[in-house]
Image (cartoon, rainbow, N blue to C red; front, side, top):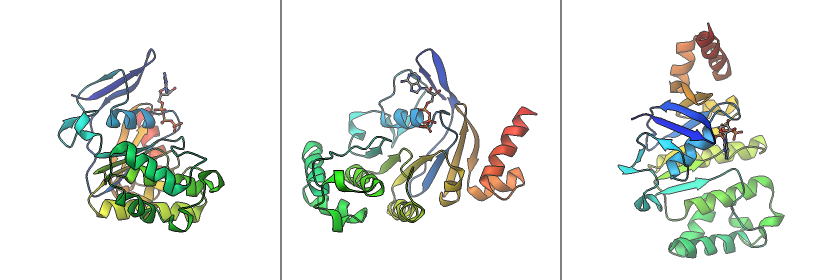
Length: 230
Ligand SMILES: Nc1ncnc2c1ncn2[C@@H]1O[C@H](COP(=O)(O)OP(=O)(O)OP(=O)(O)O)[C@@H](O)[C@H]1O
């Protein structure tokens, strides 16, 4: 059954049907307030007011058995300012019951080895995002849900992060990345374009552009919206 979510008194997701494939980076793109974070909260099992059937690796979203299989990074930094990167990772590894050896692996994956002993408060915004991502990688999740992970980062850091997302997808992880900026679209293997709580397109960037008869995703988004309004 399709996914519908009511927040407060308003329905914010209206009957969505979708799958998130493993081994790919799926972009969830749409304007601010269209429902991207809500959809992500449903997948990790923390959203109330949900109707419909949402399964992740064959289990109902939010099942206890999925706890270690999903890594989630929200828009708010999820690391402690007064601990170093390594101390943060060691702390969360203990909380999650994950092997200590994981700490070094995750720090390496996000390329923070040179800053492992730096206190988070002294890191740049991009490095802080990487530290949050490293926490989400503890326990080797099969699915990564990343809510606007590249917001506010400079182009070089954004490029590096996208490379990391693809490397993770290449190991078989299902990577879901949200963004409200359409220029991130081309970096995704597949896109779910969202507006006002519905999907207006679902496909590869090339498929979506071809179908809309334009050569960039922002134009495709506008063409689809105008087409729907017509
Ligand atoms: N706690 C809440 N209670 C009621 N409504 C909410 C709540 N949080 C968000 N909403 C509403 O749900 C809708 C979807 O919000 P959501 O945060 O999912 O959008 P988004 O696409 O992630 O936006 P952004 O890109 O700004 O993060 C919005 O209309 C918002 O006003």
